[in-house]
Length: 315
Ligand code: NAD
Image (cartoon, rainbow, N blue to C red; front, top):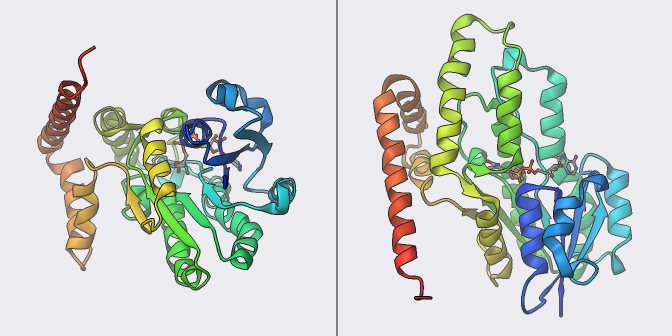
């Protein structure tokens, strides 16, 4: 039987790529409810869905910050049956906390963390009753490890991870599955928007040293990190679909192997100093080391691309 999948935040980026990939499945194993807050922004999804629209893919309105909107959407689905929930909608925020308002920070928590909580309050009881269901959350490597000037965003993803770790124990009793997908940098509108907001940020509330650190160190390296380490939304979607198709999906899945050396530091030192020292040195002390490691990563990328090209059948 076809699995019904509800995906949030499908007007762009990873959500759009996941919805389209599932809808285009050759074996038609999925019926996708691709949802978005603002239906006026469905253009790109309609294009990506192509012939699947109205067949294996339906577009619906859903704002993760509104309980009413979530309930209306779920009620409109036959028998309210959702086999797989992909919680993807999210927003970013970078910069010194002195320059961010509490309201801006609350929006990040409300979308990234309470958005997931609202979805589960509506969907989990049905999954428990049926004793089947898979909750897939697009978290981030920043759900495991904080990064300079991403304080509130990382906090929102840590909240998601802690919440899911607790819930996963109960879920096991109901035979439900929970998977956290943890991408590293992904080149999407998100990253572009976050960067542009950072460039426009009013830094007058910060001292000069902090403001310079943000513009001269963080923003300067930002583009380079995305260019060298960044995955595409399609790559993340490919990983996510593989996880959805597994009989025994893992609780955590990192999509970017180039990033795993960084996240491994967290587990290598119970005192927690190793990742903090390493990030500090990378950012502040060894600009050269930082650039050298980026070059090394570029080389790895080039080599893996090259071997991939060599492996392609001759035309
Ligand atoms: P994106 O900005 O293209 O997509 C985010 C989507 O969420 C947008 O379509 C946006 O409209 C939607 N959204 C925001 N608020 C919403 C709300 N209240 N209700 C419903 N939808 C809402 O960016 P993306 O990179 O595709 O981000 C998707 C997810 O991936 C996010 O949870 C993000 O935190 C996570 N992520 C992104 C990166 C990255 O580098 N881009 C890395 C790791 C994790």
